[in-house]
Length: 583
Ligand code: G6P
Ligand code: ZN
Image (tube, rainbow, N blue to C red; front, side, top):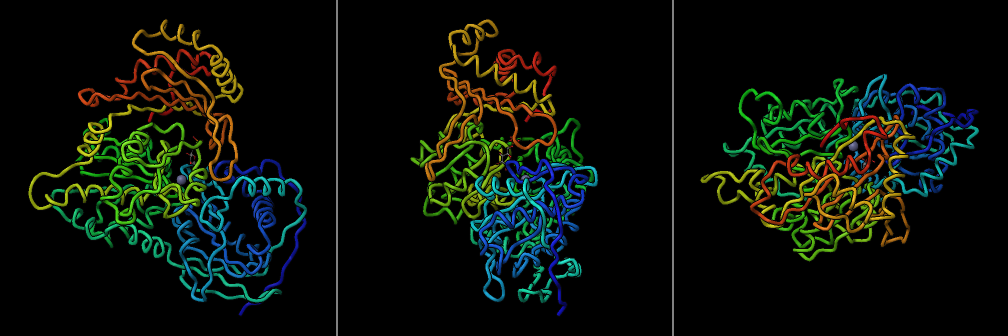
C-alpha cells in the first residue's frame, strides 16, 4: 500500500470566488491559475462540520468537461490530506448531477459506508473546453446543493485563506478502471473507490418506474424514440437505460458519447441549441431526413435539464411538469399512493396551479432555484416540481433530473397506450398535451432572453419597472396606448418568498405584472450567467376556452409581447431590437 504524507502549502485569497446559484463557475483559464481550485476546495472543507470531512466518505465527479480529470486528481490529494477516509469517483470521473444526488442518498460501500457529500464538477449547460467554462459545487448529505449558510461560509473562507493541505506524493489514481485503491497516510487508511457511473442511478430508476411497460411501448412498431445527450454526461446513462434496459435501438441515440468540449456545442436542451434533435423531430427550418420519431428528448451537460418533444411538437417545460403531475399517480408506480404536493418556480407558468387545484394538491410557488424545492421535499411537502428553465424532478433525489423526466413521459405514453399498443392508433405526445389543454385550459407561454447586456443598463431597466409599479393607473394608461386588446394590470410587485419550512425570506425574486385576465409578465435578471447581465422576460396568457387552445403561441402572445417590450423600454435601455434566444 502506497504511503503518503500531508503537506501544508502557503496560499492567499483570490478575488471572485463567491459561489453563484449553482456553485463556482468560471472560465477554465481562471480555474487553472495557481491555487485557484485548491483555495476553493480547502475553503469548502473548512466550511463543513469536522465529522463531514475527517473519516468521512465524499463523492467527486461531474459531467466530464475539460479540466475535470485534473481537478479530480487535485481534489483526491486534498481530500486525503484533510483526513477524508474515502473518495468515491464515477468511472472516468463521470456522474450526472442527479446521479451524484442518488449516489449520496442511496449508495452503500462494501464496508457499509455512506457518503456525506460531494464535489460536483460541472458548469451545467455552459459550453466546455480550454476556453470555455468549468465549475464546482458542493452537495450535502441529503443529496442537494449546499444551503446558503454553507456557501456564504465557503466564500468567507476564500477571503481569509492562508494555506491548504495536500498529499502531493499521492500518485494519480487511475479513474478509468473500476476498483478500490488504498493508501496509508498519517491519519490511517485512505481509499479511492472508482465505481460504475450508472449502476446506482439505474437501480433507483427501476424502483420508480415500471420498466416493463416502457419496454413494451418502445418495442411497439408504432412508436419511435430519439434521445440527444448533446455530448454531455447523459450519454453515459442513455445507452444503459434506453438501449440496454428498455430495448430502444442504438440508432435512437444521438450525441451520446460524453466529450470534454461537448463536441464544440452549447449543451443546453432548448429549441435553439439542440439543433440536431430539433431537426430530426421535424421542428427545424428544413424538412428532416427520414422518418420523424414519435418522441424526442435532450439533456444538458450534467443531465439535470430536459427538453421533451413530440413529432413536430414542442412541450413547454411549464406544461411538462403540469402533465407529469396530472398523470403521475396512474402512470408512475413511485407515486401510486398519491402526491404529497407539487411546486413550481415563480416564472414557471401557472399550468401546474390549475392541476393542483383540480386534484386538490398542496401547491407551492418558490423563487427560481432548485434548492427551494429541496426544503419542501425534506419536509415531506412536495413530490413533483418543475421550472420553466427545462428542469423537472421529484423527491426521489434533491436535484432536477433529466433522464427521470424522459422516463416519466415514456411512462405516461405507455399508460395512455396500454390498451392499444397492438391495435388502434397511438396516443401521441401532442394528443396528450392537447387533451391536457382541453381539460385544464392552456397557458400560452414564451421566454425572451437578452444575453450579455450591459450590467448597468439591465439594472436601470429593472429599477424603472419597479418604479412604474407604484402607479397602476399610469401603467394601464400606457398599456392602452400600446394595445387595446390587452387587459388591465391589477397587481404588480416584486416576488418575495417566505420558506414555509425554515421561515427564511427571499426578497427581490423577480418583477411581476399580473393582468385582469390571468395573463402575466415577469422580468428577472439571470443568476447563472458568466458575462454581463442576462435579462429574462417571461410572458404568459391563460386561455380556458378549449376552442381557443390550439393557436400558435408566438401569435397568441404577440399583443402581450408588444406591451412588455414597450412598457419596459427594452430597446431604449439595452440597445437590443431582438432577444438573443426565444424559448
Ligand atoms: C439553474 C438552477 C435552476 C434555475 C436556473 C435559473 O439551472 O439549477 O434551478 O432555474 O439555474 O437560471 P437563471 O439563469 O434564470 O437564473
Ligand atoms: Zn444542468
